[in-house]
Figure 1 (spheres, rainbow, N blue to C red):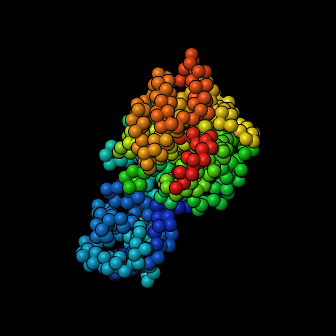
Figure 2: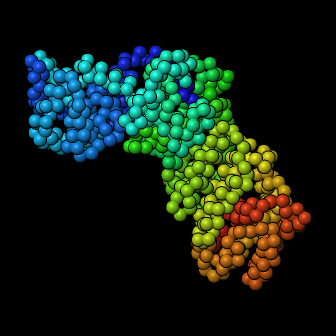
Figure 3: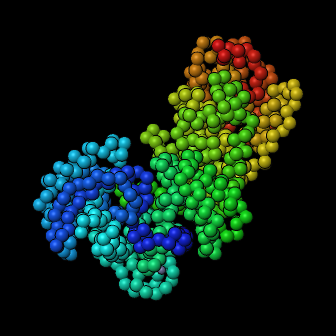
Length: 624
Ligand SMILES: [Zn+2]
């Protein structure tokens, strides 16, 4: 993956004809957020430095200020700093301290003057800062300016400071305060040439791997503690630096501070023959400032149009990361390489077709969740759930079943496992998914949250259908669920059978568990109706459901119990009862599903029964 970033850097350097200063300044950090600059002006005449005043002005572009971040506690590479704390502290820590221990006469002169005028400068800085409009006070830049021969100059216009930027940046490639120096002659890990190589190139860009699976990212011989010391030559280091900045500016998602369920990610194009295509570059630049709120897919979908016929030469790398240390470094959480553009397109198409399934359209969802529902299931949830989008719903739903929460537990690793399996087209264990579904569904059940239970079942069903459609469910080769033609005047029995066929319910046990779930749901409705209970989940029979920890025996036992309750109320329902006993009989000798699956299909039956029911009395009463 490092080679892909280097290649990107090589291309951009050539294409954009970047000067050394442009390469080394942190342009992305200032980005669009810095509007104002406070310049501390010094007069430089006859080798004498005198403080003049503070000049507030508009931000004019990164190269003038030579801004480049240093370590979070120490000073920056140049005497330019973002005001992120109290302005007096930024002045002390990043400006005054920068000039300490420098030996050139210019720096020594400025340092002397800073010491002398320290209180005056601080006072004026505070005053000027307060005068900046509140909405322009984010990331104000603090820098110094020199007046020579009546001409004001930014540090970016002074050769001495440019040289310092270059030299000190190079120094970060091989020198770390805490570890010491690491450079010497050797073979560059990236280009393979012999010569001078530096050991700390990766950490100097803020790459860190504390939680990442490093396979593929770094060579095998690089052990846990030694990732920092990958030998890289100066040319490759500079290319990496440019490539990394290009990623930050153009290929980091989601943009504008959103997060992809707790992290961000880069999409890195990797060209099989190592050569970036002009077409792709132009494409990326064209969409540079667009936001893709739906993350992961929208962007690649558009990219898909362009790369469709470039299957042989282009792969995508997805690198998921978290920003740490206030943005000083990134922690690589997961790294998925060799993703085929056509596969990304396939994912997109499959999620799209699952979203069009009949049972999650408005008409069906109104039956399941009530008349007030508007839109299909995904659209209807979008206003209620942060991060949910029309095309990324399967990621969001995955996150719901592998949450990061105080009450439900932290499953970040499993979540990333599923995401990277989907991207890299690796099978996912069916039982693993089902048990995650059932975990959340049971906890809603336990708390008598009937509405939540139905929402979770619908999400699980959609997600499962998606994984089956992209054919990633190990242990479940689902037949392609095809919409079958509706039959006029269809009865309950054939409606249910058609649903099973459309959604690939193979084996009688699933159908049996599902049917008993429907019967119990009907009984619960009867109880609500008889007893004037408003909420699904508060009925007395809820407590006979074993906390949804079900197995074959319990399912079989629930059938007569439910029937006898219905008789007590005088509310038997022969059509439904007949369906249940038919599937129970079919499953009699052949219960081929796990207990978690039994529980899941039962809960699904509870959720979906009303799709098949034409109970006028029930619908009418629920409307009231
Ligand atoms: Zn090299």
